[in-house]
Image (cartoon, rainbow, N blue to C red; front, side, top):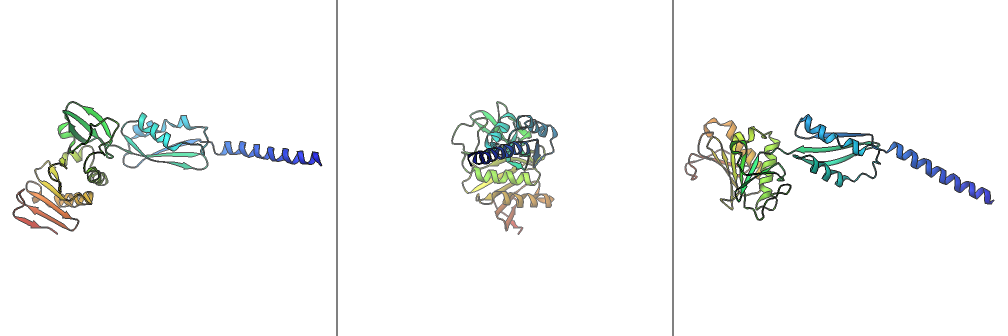
Length: 255
């Protein structure tokens, strides 16, 4: 009876050992995929895929996703990891966006370059002038590279507009070629977007700022007569006006 009991215990332990061994083999990471939502930059993708060598052989169950995100973003400048996917049984995917550095904020004589999420990518002593969109923000603390402008007043409205520019494929060279500055300081009730051609876009209130900017840019590109001077005024998604003067006189209702 005792021997039978020992055999049963031994069988259970042996089964558990085999299950662990099989599980380790089946669920060990064998491949890393990298996917970028907004760019086909192969050099950047190869940098992300280099993390494969650190993951191969590790258990997919013990993967620390947050630690991996922090390591990737620290080692590779100019990207934001959206998420880490575990593709069972043995693959992992790092999904990310490229942070196009075409936004510039001036603070205390220095120029801080930012990407789509508001993270500060660079600090420099000279402005990049026409290569960037100048952002006027009321900052509540000294910016730091690697940090965010998220502490700034009205940052959410700015981020909403930046994300809309990304969705419309206004990035890198074409966004700064179209827009000179975005001003969130001059008025508490309006956002001013200055185009390079001289037309001023006035967005009333901060809600749905991205959608309001899209409406204004749609009008700007569709009507050549509105691209050289005057002001496009966006009240809401259903009310857009054009003024020949920037003081809101001679307004012509568009919608």
